[in-house]
Length: 146
Image (cartoon, rainbow, N blue to C red; front, side):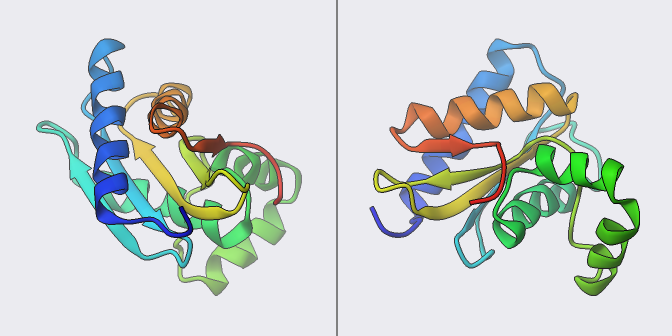
C-alpha cells in the first residue's frame, strides 16, 4: 500500500471506536489523515464534546507535519515550550501536543498517514489509535522522528 484510501481509513476508525467501547472509554472522536495531512475519515461518537473533531485532527496533523507521534510532540513542548509555541503559531494553531496522534506506516515503513483520537485520557486515546492501526496490518508509530 502506498497511500491511505477511504476503505482503510474508515476501517481503522471503526476499529478505534470498537476498542474504545471494549475499554469503556468516554465518547471518542477519530480522525484519519493521509500523508499530506488531508482528512480522509472523521467519526465522532454520540456524546463527544464540541471541539473533539478539531483536537483529533490536530493530533494527527501534528504527527504527519513533524514526522513523530503527538506524545513526542508533547514531550518537546515540555522541553522546548518556546519552540513548540512558535511552531504552533506558524501553523495557525493546528498542533495539539498531547498523546493520541500516531503515524501510520505501510509494510515498507513509509508514512501513509496518521490517526488522531481524543475523548478519553491521552493514554487511552493513544492505545485505541495504536490498536486500530495494527488491527489492519499496518504499523503504528507513536514514537520519535521518522
